[in-house]
Amino acid sequence: MQITLDKWDTAVDSQAKAFLVGVREAAPLMSDGGRIVAITFAPGGRFGSWQPWVAMGAAKAAMEVLVRYFAVALANRGITVNTISPGWIQDSVLNSLPEVFQTGLREWQERGWTPMGRLGTPADIGNAVALICSPEASWITGQLIDVDGGASLMDAHLPLEFQGVATPKKPDAA
Image (cartoon, rainbow, N blue to C red; front, side, top):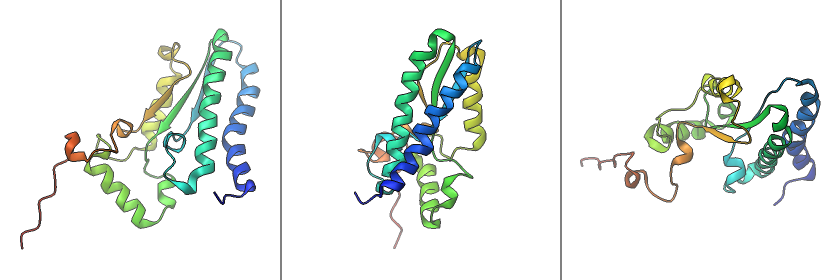
């Protein structure tokens, strides 16, 4: 609620506005079709729990909407427009967060909140981008593709034990 308009503008300009300008400049150069890929962080646009990221979450959500509009507008030219949404990635913004947060997040991933049991790697994201840019992906457009080891499939309303992906911790013997 206390975010300054300058911080809001910075977030929106660096995400939605930058994507808008980038696509408008790139599309005329793509005479024989092509691929446009946005990188987002979908939880920022889906959830409202991480309050310090209010502007970035809104900006990413706006970019995701632009992807769908551009996908429709450019489809008849053979240009696909999609969004890749990474989960938590090693060697990323995660490294700039407090150590206690980093440690907790890594343990959370290993415990089962990410079914693959690990953080993602930059290569995981690069592979997803390569896939969506391949000729075989020519009929996929306007999609948000979660590349998160299955984290987006988990139900935050239920303990992991109820979801069958974690074993309950046994109490320490006294």
